[in-house]
Image: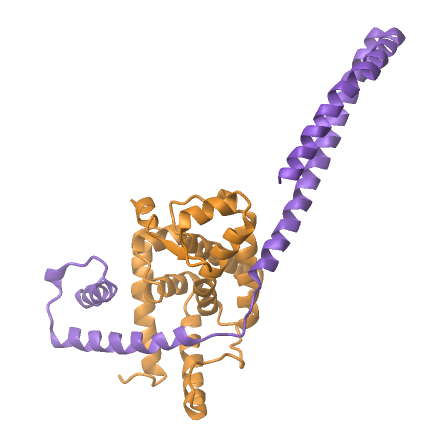
Length: 134
Length: 196
């Protein structure tokens, strides 16, 4: 990097209030010319700050849209979990019944008929309560 | 250190009460829609200005602005308050714009319906032409250099913050800014907008 380039870089850092080596910046005529040019150029560039395209976005609509997407994603996830769990449970039972035989199936059905409502009713209550809170 | 700085960021709600940005973020994370809306509304103009300067195209600006906000709402729970919310939005917008550039390497067309704030019609026409030229010059920079220049020049982000947003070393940010400023000076001189 040439000395001139180093100096111009320092002047840019100085303009933007970033750290620079103050001793290295000695105001020669060339530097002053560059500094003036830079000030003029960056002042011109500031005109861009006034540009405004006719864009209008309803932030509430975006929040609603995001909400819809989240609900879809959640239901998709829940479906996947349901399918995986069902497959797992059915596979485990199939293996067990193959080993235990017909008696096992009957005992299992009796167990399910008797105990499942006691588990499902509180679980449904809990889920409904959580949905209401949300 | 940054965290302490952001404790001082307040947003005034419609009711006139002072709301801490962190508080709003926490509320938004809990699913409070009005807090989320307030956060987006407060940062809307800054984000819009940044995207307009980055793209120079109204349709693309609208798309990226919308997508940025949608992504922010969808991922609000992942936001960590070790940076300002506006910085996070700018990071998302920059990433989306980069992805868009990678997808469609199209030509950028500057739109005719850009509005200037000048009142006099003659003045407005002249400045509109100048705006266009200046926007073209900014668009002439590669996107990563453009992002550095816009963030530094218009939003006064520090080299450190820009490095975080663009995920690159501070030295790279510095050299990109130096290059951009020199390029802009040369282009403005070449087009006769400033005197040589």
